[in-house]
Length: 87
Image (cartoon, rainbow, N blue to C red; front, top):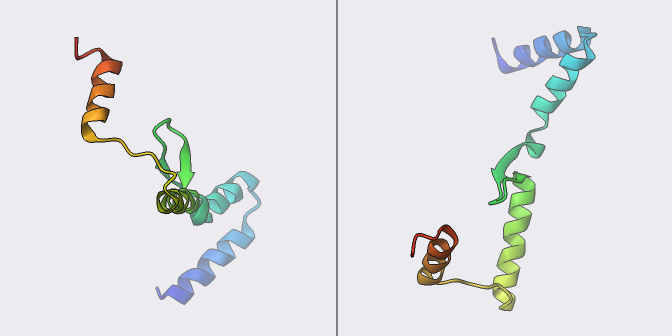
C-alpha cells in the first residue's frame, strides 16, 4: 500500500468512528510534539519542546555567568554525605 493510499484508508476509518475514547487515544497518539521524552531529576515529565527551552535557558545563564558549576569532587562529597557512605 502506498503512503497516500494508507493516509486515505486511515482517514476513512477515523471518519467512520463513533467511539470518542478511541478518537481521544488517536489524537493523543498524533500529538507528537507534546509527548514526554525527558524527565527531570525529580521525575517531572518534560516534552521535547520544554526540554529544549530549558537547555536554551541554561545556555543563556552560562553565557551571562549566572550558572553555578560543581567540581566532581564537590559532587562526590555531597553524595557521600547525603548517603552517609563517608562515615
